[in-house]
Length: 366
Ligand code: NAD
Image (cartoon, rainbow, N blue to C red; front, top):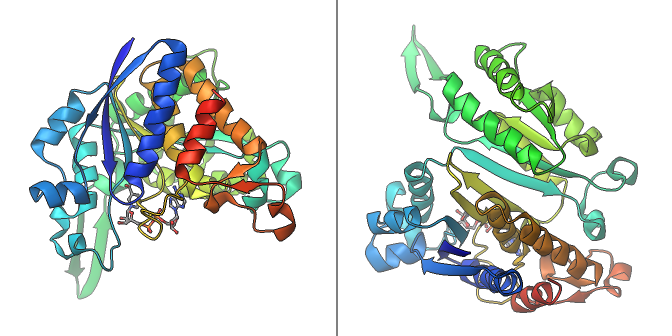
């Protein structure tokens, strides 16, 4: 099969890590008989330099014409880069918000997976970690509190601020369906997280999730209150498969879940709409402090490419091949600088390598 992949290399470490992800995709393509055709799309600082805007209409059209978009990262040093002297709507990050909106990317997926070899980076006790954990946080991305009506005004001489949290049943249904679909590709369990003991929006959330669950008899599901979920993530993370939740709860829980896995250089993510289209990107930023040094960890971007194969192209076997190769590279003792052990005595068991070498070693193991 031939797949059209839009590529946003972006700024900082972006071009370097995206080059490695493309290398891995091409390697998978050769092995399994697929062709990936890339179209470079300008976004972020590079787009500002070239066109005066962080994302042009032409770039949006290029993204829409792709089957999926793979992205590195955008932005520069927020203290020193001239991009941050521009008005907010012309800064690099405005491009990403505009793209998410233009493509209606309402579902954000962030896996939190603990690699056996990187257990040391996990702040939890060994007895809690056990054999490790593997969960997916599915966050609604375009509704709820962050997009509701808001105002700040003086009422009877007292400054008062208001933010509205609104969800309609269609918004809940489409993300719930996505969550159950994703669970079917994993371990068939959904934990729907809400605050139904207090919020009307959560009570509607719960009702709609229950309706959707009826169409997925093979997937077990449970409801959990968000305060309990925040505790359970550090008490017993192994219990989770897919955590399905609304925008603000997901914002907070996904950071908590990723923190317990260790390095930012390992964390992939996806944003999906109601077609097979998705935007796939590492969770980290453009890391201007290490840009151009050839030392950035490309694994988060490579794993994002694996998510693209699984969720946009239904190439589950090929995605697993990449994920297994990443595990094997870690088992074989290769590390980029960000995932080197802190403990001096542990360093003798591993070899530090750069961005390109990491890409090559992963290809060799596919
Ligand atoms: P950052 O994630 O870029 O960097 C934080 C720290 O993590 C740095 O020390 C960096 O070196 C390290 N790091 C990040 N990714 C790494 C990797 N792959 N390998 C090794 N080390 C890695 O966050 P920041 O410094 O707060 O932001 C820098 C720029 O990135 C800003 O302009 C910010 O707006 C932008 N940003 C963009 C995105 C995006 O493109 N989606 C996301 C977050 C931040």
